[in-house]
Length: 357
Image 1: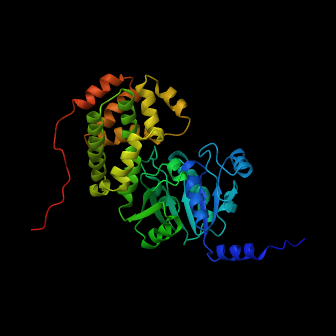
Image 2: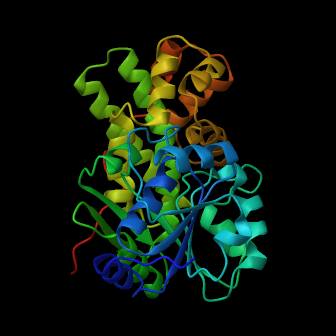
Image 3: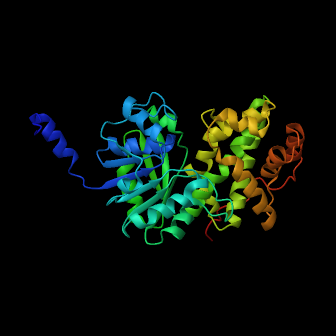
């Protein structure tokens, strides 16, 4: 039986179909859901892929992802599937929004389904355990035929869902990829800035999770504003020192993906890593803290990996080392904080821009 649409609905449908791009977002967590919905609201054809069949059915029935973004009504034009083949069929742009622990496995499954001109963007903020590779590096290794980019910045999904003014960074060597992502996501409340230091932007997104945990501990221990400012600024120094040693531009850390993301995750109870820290500060064990948060907090694994890498490379990182001692060696919070605060007093600002002669 043929369905006859009213003229107004036909005109609206024709308008929405003028853009033929096909977008896929892989991962139905909070940020993946927010990204997919923004693209849908901007009138692009987008499919959100989720592993969980139960989660998929729940969104189909209620119109919201109550497990991750309760109360956030999703666009009716957003397509949903748990079939990866269907999600990636003739797709132009793919956002990988899954945890770093499952990133490589998903990239391998996606590779044979993608053409060489597909643009790939990672939203993950973690480091792979065995290789110390960042998510975009995994994409390059597993799907070398495609251009790769990274989204990172102070992007709490719950605030995006409330239409709070938000900005992010798209980082890639490809001008085309950066422009495409800006086109897909930009709105009157979400701004997208470009950066070509992909490694620095992505590393900043991973490293700041360590210091969000430290800041959560300080919050639970009723630290004053002076103390919090010390934690924040020394965290930034530690991040940029580590990143510069690995080849990133330290000035990248003055932007949204550095100090912007660090500030948000070190001050907001919406940050999972910050909540891990507040739980530890209340005296909970690491296992109890992880259970109480109930979602993956990348900072726990990142702390372990960065502590090991910093020792290999001889990089001075007292905050990360102190946190590691608390989480994995049983050192008390008080003793760890003493270790952090008795660290060597060195220069305040390690990287400066020299004036031209």
